[in-house]
Image (cartoon, one colour):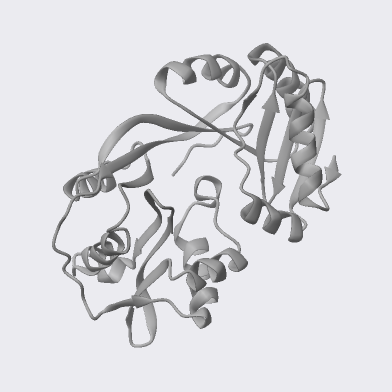
Length: 272
């Protein structure tokens, strides 16, 4: 396995699979700023197995594994070899698609790995509305980046949430994409989001357990919606079995889509 030292190496390695002109399937979607950060952190590695490129983000206790391959049959053979070679490592895979597409992937992954959990995407079409803004919500400061990282690591599942590095948090704060509520100088809730011209994407919504049912979450979401008032769509991912969260999002107008993220692992463990 080779460490990626420059982002151009990753780009060219993916292009090599495309240039085989035998087909192209992947669970990796290149994001130059984000993946350049992985490279700079020394966390990104690649390995070629036949006509499949495996892209690995190494974490302290597990690896996120992505692939670019030519066909499902090729992926199945290469996946078996890769999993056997690294059977002592905790491997995590995400496979994204609609129900019809995922039937084909499930035949491969179900036979070789265990499903850790599944997520579903929810979305809403933005409409004109009145925004109930609160003085309790403000844009996070750079000095709060470390505190935000601590909360993310303590309250979110790193195997499904892909916890961002502090450098990514700092970049999001700089873009004013992190909103916080505080009490006595401590963060009690936050929203972290990304924004494009058409889509507002909710990445993390958190309220400290001691402050739930005190309208902290609704204050944060109202500000989040205001930040995306010029976007056509609002989107998020949620654990498919998290009925409580799905009901809350439904209350705010989000609806379940036919798009799922199946998370697989080579270890016998389920999402808790």
